[in-house]
Image (cartoon, rainbow, N blue to C red; front, side):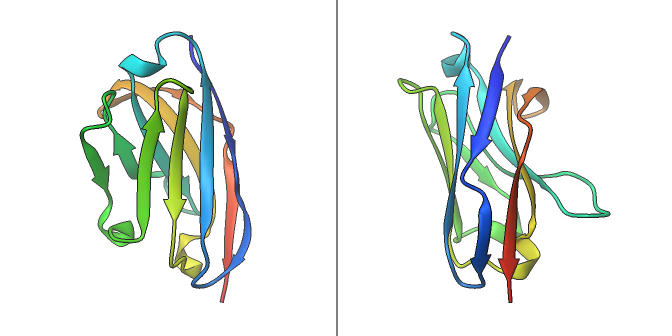
Length: 118
């Protein structure tokens, strides 16, 4: 079992930056792929970025490429999402997720709100 707790959300002006953190419990963290998803009001939850268990492979949805960076520290059971040049359309609840691979997300955090004002 893996428990995930996100932090770092908040209110920021367009063009600003935020860093989301996800702390994971459980000894299997280093063997799991980690992802960040977001869900805006009235919209489906979408994958923003994910990182392989080793950290050697990453994926970003097109709308965040060049602005967001995902990273992980397996020694600290932590995954980060650095978000720069934020836009109002980045406003959403952001969720951390863990899974055996990118197609199988088994564990979810409670979410953290990110609001970008124009």
